[in-house]
Image (cartoon, rainbow, N blue to C red; front, side, top):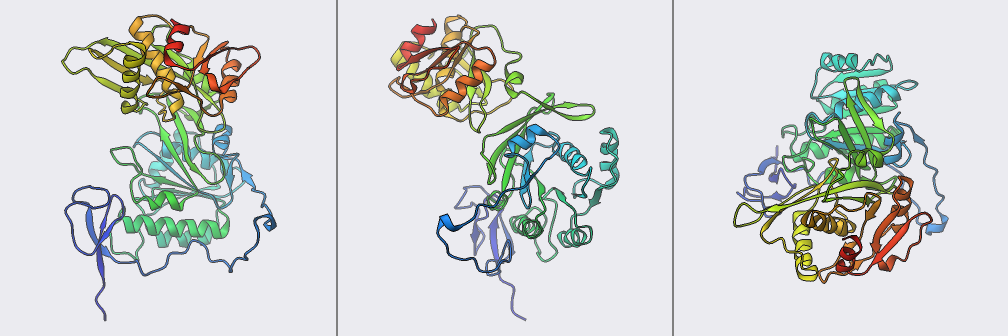
Length: 446
């Protein structure tokens, strides 16, 4: 019998080495390489199909995607219209944020006329039953199966043939064919491949729960996110009432879509208008501005808050929540160089209200005006929205979806908009204030 070949695999990024290394050359993490059996020569196939034909793109018929509702209209919209048959959705979030509660409620609504198999490796059947009782869930079509063995799970799937699968979670499930422990790179990859293969062969949609690291990224190898069709992040403060489902990846719809839920003693309730939720408690004070945020197909109005106060220490603080602190440093430098707004001896704090994280550059102008407003202690008019990218020389650059942003703002009663001059937009019922430089924006508002 030949000797089993082993390799050392990084548990953070999946890098392989023939010998142990203290630091992973790929991701730079220390003491993450673990010895595992080498499966590189074994093939992993998602679906066994016949050889496809080679045809021009115009010859392929567009298959109509049949979508099924999750029971929540906001979640359906975020997913692009509902679940597609065979779609595998990875949902990740902080411990205790409400992932299991949401999936149990989705399973209950889905099981009204179909069979659902809820597989849990983190909780016993009695624990899930207690939660179901609190949520008033008592559906005979909702089957609970507390198991962590992949082979047993696949066997039960063959027997029950459900219309929806929920796996909670992929890090606790293991394959008996592998010698490594549950949660390792090899196990996570094998479990995800096999579950995805089964679901796509039988056109069964599935939700897979993924744990996250202390940095906030999804635990396990990056290949986990590549295998699945959709990745959604469950965000929000654990001690807050509101939760946000944000679509990071979606092969059957656009990314950046969000759905907002409110946590109650009877489970999660969807919030119909996300924009109304985010600006419902907008502060009427200096340093507050409304920004129309667009990552998906639907704009969402967000409140950007800034606070500028005298620094207590020699080195002033630059703290942000939901915004890149490096981007804030660039904006403050531009304000000082191009508009003579000095903050070198003051602490600057920026917050995106509601727990959202904004990465698009169109928020630059809103952040800059919020900082100036707090610095000058002058309020920005309550009926004004602001968006635009700020360049290093102070120029205001055009951004995408300008018309959609303005229409969403007008729908909620905003009548003025400070926007990049290059957009050249006109919206009925709104006064559009085009600016080409950051100094012009400050003159308009203050």
